[in-house]
Amino acid sequence: MVIVLFDGFAFGMLLFVLSVGLSVTLGLMNFINLAHGAFGMLGGYITVSLMREWGLPFILTLPAAFVGAAVVSMVLERLFFRRLYRAGELNQVLFTIGLVFIAAAVATFFMGTGQQPIVLPGWLRGSVELFGIRFGVYRIFLIVVALTITALLFFTLERTRFGAQIRAAVDNQRVAQGIGLDVQRIFAITFALGSGLAGLGGALAIEIVGLSPSFGFHFLVYVLIIVSVGGLGSIAGSFLGAALLGIGDVAGKYFVPEIGSFLIYLLLVAILLVRPQGLLGKR
Image: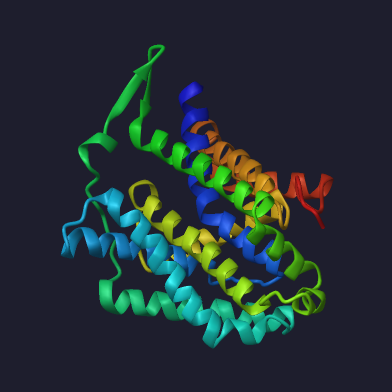
């Protein structure tokens, strides 16, 4: 039972890293970015390419995955996304889901349709024994990374000048511009932060769930569920939602494999019936 909870929590932390960026862009910027999973896929392919072609160790490819996804997102934000901030939800949905199809086609053309395995360094493989129970080292690593990201995001958004500027720009763009804030620059940085976290999540996900051109579609469902359950604009809600759904998904597949794949949808419905705005949603 303990190992099921541990594996479920580790999977939930992976989902949190993948989804928290969308919680930032959707919850704070009111922008529906269904291409979020494509940035996760991009981060995964950056890691695969750097390890295979350049021989970089896995741990050094993680910041590269973050930066690569963030830079690409900044270019796309400047060229395309910025024009849609004031557009209707349908326009945002259609455009961003179209980008997912394009990203999948590009990945298929350059990398093929198969899974892209990687070889982790020795210190991330195997397991350690605590109290007679063996815990996977890589899953421990995922939990540590997710907890670190959570602390950094809370500090950045709640305790820094930049976090105050983001909240001001979201609450009232005209007033924010009137007091001298560069709203477009703030939104561009925020969007890059969310997409970079998706890229980091995609790199971390390779060992657990693999990487293929369908990554952007497959994990988009999980990401949207976590953001819905956690609540828009709430990092703590996304963390709690990801942990609950990760544990529910793993426990369901372990204890009731016949319906395990559907358990997260049952949890989604149950939570939203009680809390339509999500667990810790602000609106």
